[in-house]
Image (cartoon, rainbow, N blue to C red; front, top):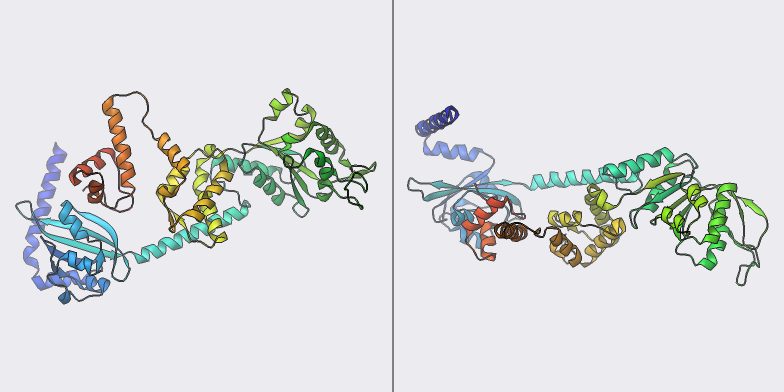
Length: 478
């Protein structure tokens, strides 16, 4: 109670002090004061006709006030002096409003229209202040450029692996500890999580980086050819063999690293021979008898449950333990959502460069992508970003441009839960409708027209659900 009394007293005192200043300045002195400030100031009457502006306004809009005195804001807007008119919004919505718009020279401006009320509660004038935010945009672009360069440096240090999340930082930390040892490493994780990238990272930061790196997809080679591909063959070993014979992948990797991807698809007879290579560091070519030494580090990867395969007889137990000396599990994107925004930016930059585009992505689209489940993980995200770069008509990728199955998944994630009263479920549905509509419109007046209701109702509902318009800077209310 005491605090309220003190607040009212302070406000009354401030009001009296402001009132007492009326006699301190003549009219020309007020104009001089307003002309001395850097912000552009414009005054309209209660109907939207131009009354006065300061010199900063004339400079920003490149016009002499004498040429527009008495003109209506709709006429000035039609002439292209600015668009849209903040005064029109203030007079329509009867409240202070802030927007970002452009003048006749394409300069981006932050303008705030403030209504001045008379004693009867009617708007007598609208005071608009405008500020050139082009410099802010330049600074923002420099900041983004600096951020991207920083990200690029981080990406270079991690050889393209995005690791903003604690989970991926732990993966890279473990990889660094294993870089200079020759123990076998088994990389596990869902399809598309980046097991191959982690294998290459291990190679690039290790003491074998000057030797070859040979990547083999064991599931992509026909069973009849995989032995000769891995271990090579002697001349005349089989019909169609080269007359001079051929080195296999293990010989090609001598002095470096061999990465056996999809190791769980290796046929059982080959598993025996691979076990022998790991134990003896010797190979025998198909059709040959000579044992050839190979100095290789063996990395392998699988998206299968090898323990289960061992139990069911599809994978040799002794080979499993030989490969699984040091396991590294790569988490799925669901487990590291912090990495998704950086992955989107990284791939957007890559495909923009590849296809000579200059696409950007809105915050609303990023939000939907960040909330998606990504069953295909990084590989699926890369494919989606590439598709968006190629198929989106404008330079800005918005939520509406995303594939239908992603939008449907997002809607299902936000769907009304079972249970609860009818009123609660109707409120949730209303909030969802308003949230989606608020992504598309700049002002509450536009939103009200689209939803066929009154603007005051929209303002009240937006405040109720704490929803803000996305594209404009207009708050729900003051």
